[in-house]
Image (cartoon, rainbow over the protein chains, first blue to last red):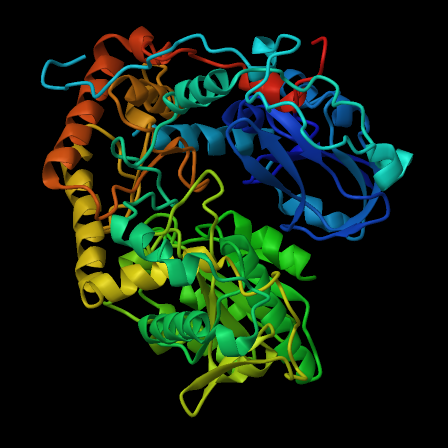
Length: 132
Length: 495
């Protein structure tokens, strides 16, 4: 069910590459775990972000969670729709609710991320763990 | 509901409206006699621009309506004076009445902060004595009582670290924060001008010292550790962690929110902490919640003392004075001298219970472990180490029937208990975070355990009952999502 043209992180973000630009969002698993999203905080365009470090937050009725960047680079664009409609993250996490577009500083970083099959296996393992 | 659970009470009024809705024109709380002196024209006396004709929408009600209104809605509250309040990481413990007695003593309650120092010797002595006690309990060298809450204490602590590192020539860039730390820590670091780097806990729920060695470099200003951490687990490698940081010129900040597990037993100053805050409204039994108000004193090692907020209470030849002349100070962080009335209560607690503080810590740990053992066969325990003052379960077993931690918490209300902390810490999916505190006797803990076991049973046999709880309150499942997305923060006329 996870798009095969994306790569995934253990923190449940996805990234889809188009040239040197990567579009980043959170996965369906992540939105499900968060519950109803009520607020999203994203970085400014032009901000430098680092792989593995938080660049924004997603707030649900349950908790405030950080969004970790899968890659390093500079923020090229942010999804302004989410300001007024944070619920889009619950409705369409892999489509309309993308968070930011990043101009990557090192294209090879993407290669170390999970592909869809590996991510699927990772969350299956996680679900087994938490329901053990 | 199982038969051995007795309910403490019911709401007396299930449908009290807003006070604005009780308003009708001309009603008032107090009727004054007719004027027997000539009336003064306010516009003439004050200037027309300062005269207000009325306040739009201000409720017009009688005195007894006001009294009844607030008394009725107060019965919808839950309070520690009513029953157990097992909110993890919040330490909702009993506020001894001796604290209130002392805070109301005439010589204390009627003092004014603008009184000259010569006439405030008693109050200054209260402050100095409390500082000394807190320094003794924490094993630190100096204390500021100014910060008005834990989060402000954190910020004060990080500003002290920044000022110290700046005086050494480089304030540095990053603050390390483990994923088991208190939620306010990252915000504090950012407001103090630092970038936050997260550290993952190991399989035991502790900081991985071996990995920390690789992370700490010249850019790291400090590590903020909560110890015991939010899993209720004591960081056993804390001394080694301090050494790793110190070897690279970084400092160790301890969030002392969980100090109620350590007071009288272990001293952060002895295990390498450079600066920490205490929550007097937790460990030191002052009122908590509803604005408290809180108090978050900060305790520091000698190297940070020159930077403490001013004024500092100093003692010379048996007399107390306020020292404003501290060239390296970070400045004032709070008006006057902190929340003085709260500081008095904390001092009363410390003096009344003194060495008993150790037993308070031991009982807090004992109660949490008693509950852990009594519930671990029905609720999943993700981290198996013995806990300190709080225990964290997960809803993994109940989730199979579609019942999550929030549902269990809501059902607990029907049993007459305040819910525990839900869904925190984040490293445990579906967390149930329970902190009984030392205030609870065995019988109260047993009632709580019975309730939790009964709910686990319901979750297995009648999950719908739990998922639709609470059933005994005035309102049930509020629409938290809409409230968060489109909040209405105040009543307006005509709404």
